[in-house]
Image (tube, rainbow, N blue to C red):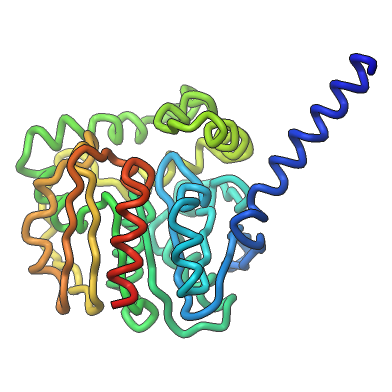
Length: 296
């Protein structure tokens, strides 16, 4: 076999692997959010369940949870705008939280549903909290992974020097030109599995680094940190929170008092030994906890 033919076959095999790994977990599609295409992968049948990733991530972060959840729900894992195969509009204003909430609402509408279970991690958690507060009739139940309620995070930023120090990365992301320092390879620092890391590199290569950091520029609090005078509306649905206690960016002190900001039951599960990406650091435990809570 010639070297040229061997190289061609290897390339074809790689492309086939890249193009079909989504098929192993579900079917791909797109929802329209006021002209912005939102890419998703869906599997299963039943009540709608929408999963929203954070930074730096994409729909594939839910790969360990999707099969088990798809046995009970129609699972839809999205790429948020700016990431992977979703559209990447320019301008900080296009990444404000109301736009991100609108993307989730568009996905729910795309599947002809009136409401959905909404699951979010990191920035996806912020979007999920915001969906529940601004569109309570759309959110059946809420599952949040490693993103404290906005009230708790603001309180800690205003009063806790350790959280202020832990949020230094966010302040750097808000600076002009910060995206130029990012690379697809560097953003995969947290992905432990080699095969998964290759998929992440590909996804980040076709993402917008400016878009990624616009989440911080448009929505993350800026110094001087203060507690807002206007209170957020209470969350009206049942809430499950799962928090890896080794998270170095979002410290667990912000979890305190969450029960004051929800009207129904709150289940808080902390996971020692797991970090920020708890859905992968403790994948089996997180999957089991989510399925048990959502099906009880």
